[in-house]
Length: 309
Image 1 (cartoon, rainbow, N blue to C red):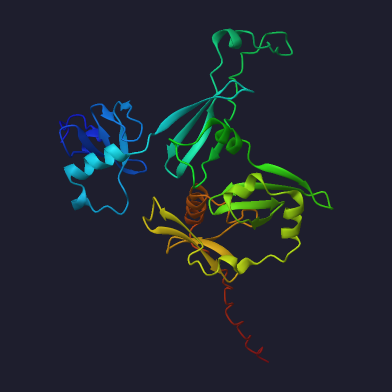
Image 2 (tube, rainbow, N blue to C red):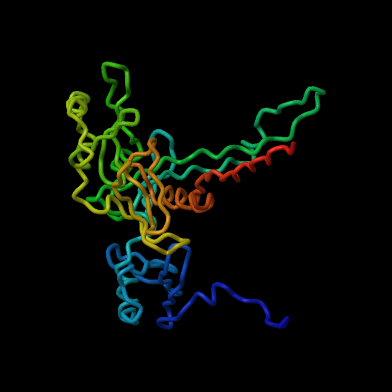
């Protein structure tokens, strides 16, 4: 039993489909990978070791060699360089992510010269402190609109997307109103009050006056009541059950059919992400079932026997 040798996890999770294409199972599901260069059908560019996701609705027996080749040829590019931001000089790229296409900036690492020129801090005894590890700046990102794709989005559109959320101004009480794009479409946000708007194009055209008019109307929580469930986030990594958001008696809640957790008041449905839903369910499971307090019944007091005369 001790001479099993080393186990190659990557080899175990790999199934050859053709001589060049292999089916692999990754963290976010199955995908195809080519060991040879392929030609992108849309751009005509040669792609080395290209990949393609396997559609969730594709049955295993339908993944033939011909289907694998078709998926590889029609796969969207994983990354495309759009150009440089004229204000920061950072490179801007468009990518295909697990939860949709998006654009982001590439922030370069600090050079050795820049690290060496960092100011030196000293202890109270006068000895120099070791240099702190520089905090990496968080890159700006933005999800692509439904009308955009990785191979069609332009640099100007990418810069607009990364500038969101867009501040419209303040209401009479001094509350800032912003407009942004969410998982369920474009919406306005004022504190914890979010309101949906028409189309993604309105994100860059809606005015403060129009936003104030929307907020002057009573909020209709039943606007999405016809859609059941309110949202779907795919299978849970633990229970493997589909995660959905439903409207409950005390407001919307997240469930995988086994564990339920109410959507926090500080999080609107438009802002709720798959990662947050998975994390909330995991925290609820870790707490275990709610233990109801029970009152222990006291034994009846023993009656004293009357004293003998």
